[in-house]
Figure 1: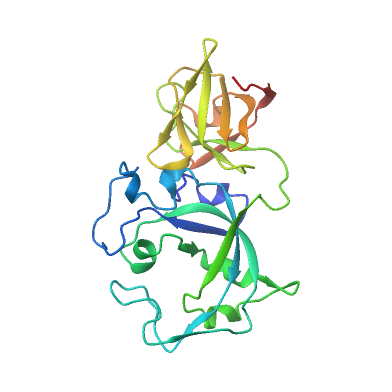
Figure 2: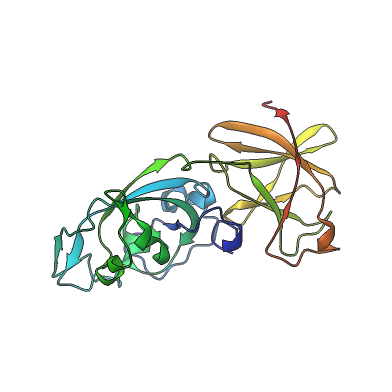
Length: 259
């Protein structure tokens, strides 16, 4: 699983990034327990609450004449200089799917650092064309800028799947993908009342539902408010316990319930 609680096979895109877990500049050895409880030390990953959102990344200057490796205390492009090249201005939309807690300068000293999935780099677009694999030869942790954006050409509905080791009653572990607005919370309807589900660690797209048997009626909360409610059953192919990382289920949709 990636840091947001989904396997790669359950992602709606192959273009994705990781965000920094902790905001602890200069400290490369401390790995804070997750989710992080001290608000001052929470990184842009935001304890999983930025999972499933999208960024539009623009490539900037590259580092020339230095390793720019991100090793602790090495400094960004120290001894080199920032130069523009033929890839400046290329853009790509990518989804937040993972987290970075590594003990290097990128993941500790730069709050806004994005860790871009390597295979995505050649698909950046400049003047209407992909820039190709040549960018990998000249990639030295170049500068980037980015903006939060809506999912590009969003189609379809939310994907709901049971996680590995999920059970029908006592461990109802469910993950959510293909989200239009990210995910801030999940609730399950139990005996006529909405009960909060529990995020699994800081895996922002994976939740444990309240422990009652199927069928399950849930709703999702995002920056856009509450979703319609989704009703689904435990997948028969799982038996008593799911073995696959993501067993997708079908569901019925009811009108939005906002209270």
